Image 1: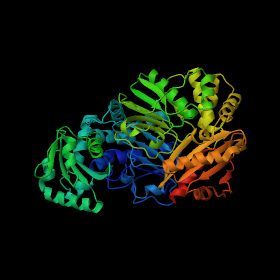
Image 2 (image 1 turned 90 degrees about the vertical axis):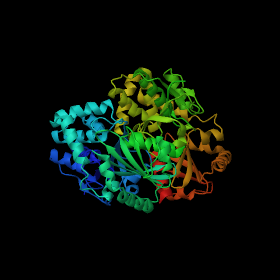
Image 3 (image 1 turned 30 degrees about the vertical axis):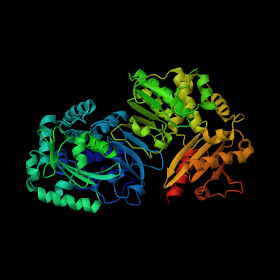
Image 4 (image 1 turned 180 degrees about the vertical axis):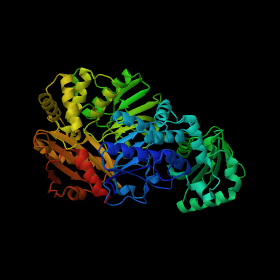
Length: 310
Length: 310
């Protein structure tokens, strides 16, 4: 096992996997004994990107082994999204683009968060700062991460810096941004073989909002109705998670990648906060349409945190 | 009042004051409506630096006014060291070199912490990144901050990056590093007009360690015995603060700038942790010599946090 492990969050998405891979490669080029790892299964969208650019997925770990001296977190900082024994290891760096919360260290560290749409965008910048040229494969991975986090540059989290990086990286990677991007998103939005349990866990993150424990799962899809064909089964899985983790709210978000609306299902004792936070009424099935809402981070977490803390 | 306020921690030291001044100037040059402010009295060392380079101290504030949209924190991130209403304001940036703890935001932000000896060292780098030349006055302020935080490049917190920055800045500022540095430290170490209350408050920081509330005050001096001439008065002030703030430990650190040892006084129900953490015995006066200990951050906070959490 390498001395420094680099990993993103649990329920890994394309930014988390690709950023771990590319940052480990950059660190190796700069002389560090770094190894990328992952905390969960590779999703279809990410696998499409890895296959397209001929890159192996990083190794899966359950916990950080005792012989690892340092870890570097990419694409997250909140401990509940990180490896289970994160409190026992020394975090030497964080590269992230999320809010900072439930994170602390005993010692000074290198912590770099920027309010851009994607960790990959920061990594693209860091290559330049270190005078390292981004390889074709790495450009493809970073581009895939930006497309994923920005839903093809359409999310409100996407900044001009992300857009510029995406076009620059597409050229190095030798792909057409729009064509490759839509193919990748569609590969990820193929839910034909997914179970109800997959839906509610494949991209789920837990948050502390005020005193409340909230879990938010998001699934991108071409047609949100397809997701809810068996809503009862989804509800059953969610109720189980609410009980197991003692959650106050589980928000399941099905996002249409073509119309850019989200069809959400809210369960748990604090589900009223979804109505308050988004000024909608949940229907008899505990569902509501959030028009133009595609970003968990910028449009959902911010809004709900505000509601829970006021 | 400007739209964005920039400030360092309470009980401001030279790095906090100078970094606020210089970063506000950099931000203004980059087009931001930024204003440096401070959260407490300017100490003698800082005043020496300001006078030497002909710069006015920033304005004192008690709290952030309602018409301020954003704040930028320099040289700190822990909320208990920040302005009282920090939870009510939007933090758009943090530039710091301390551990991250008791800090959170609702939204993504620009957070830049680096494990170097001084915030000013990071600001020196940021001028280069933005293609902005450091003025003679600003070079003097940044240099003063580095000399202060590193006790003339002698503290274990001081990295090669700080050393290189210090020599570079001394040349721009037109001063001899050693001569100016010792003059500045001596000005700060002049305690002839200080009261016992001054000693325990002039550079005091509060920390959460495990479940414990700990306050650590540090005074640099040419002769630590001079500080303890009236130890009873110092103890009385500390007991008052322990009662008022319900502290578990107050550690008063008198650091000799010539011999680089610290003569500490520990009071509070958790004072045993000082003995454990540093493998020393407190004498009948609750004092102990910590050989070679000059850095609160790297040698004291790290050590005590470890002791309190294990």
